[in-house]
Image (spheres, rainbow, N blue to C red):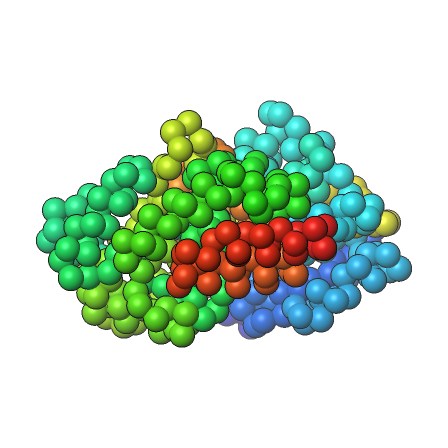
Length: 418
């Protein structure tokens, strides 16, 4: 009995440390819908809700966990017919249909200049903004960027490129050494679209990229062609591994591990399999995708998971209190640590696990992504447009001379989709 009591006291101390004293105890109800059905995310969310409950013992919290895939088909129905107070979802254009349908609550007051959220979650404000208003708060994300063989760069006398010209120069040296610059597997089409995201955002900026996602820019627009022409400089010089269209992203990793390619553009999820394959942190390093057009603010791909308040919520004050709790530095530190989600807190004042790549990604997203945070091509663009575009991107990487035909075809799809 004594050991159980000690454990309870320790647990309570943890709750107090993480939540801090409540300014006013909440009462009434709070209904939360979650799509975090996989074991680790589910346990993380349930523990977080338990801490909020401990800080507000008079509050009656009801949590419903729905399978992630089923959630995608059910969200519109439950927002329309039986709205919870709080729900999980995704940022940027993934929330747009529900914003435009009037199903999500405007929480711009929580993002007002000078507020804690505005100050500490600034890197994702653009991703949470539609029509000049904010519609939720983020709780986790992870970085994309270029993971490279530091030992090979040092062997060839190369440095992390500061701009696209240096990136191309590095690539020429890599090819001259008998290696490819970048490994990639485009059998799963989304891998090619990561290159389009970065080339487009570095050439024309985040706002232009999001305008494309909303269907406001023709695929035959000269600016889109310029993005592909920059990409074509890499394709035509032989920067990418051969036969990539028949490899998935995991099958592309051995080229980096074996030193046949110098780098890969990928999300942080690639680090674990690269480590498992034998690369040490002395061999593997990370850098931000370099500048292309001077003066264009750096924007990043950082898929972001979010909490929202339903427009039909019955307990909006309690819901706002919960969102503020989720956005806090202490909570984002806890839920994103290696024992829980193992990702990055969005709150710039949070702490992160002692991991080289998480630290580099956190620094980049917190302090060097003023242009905005995109959610990745197939999250930002409507599904039908994304599928056709990614097929075109894969084709371009194999047959760059087909660009005119590809862009004309994608423009036809844009007119149908939007």
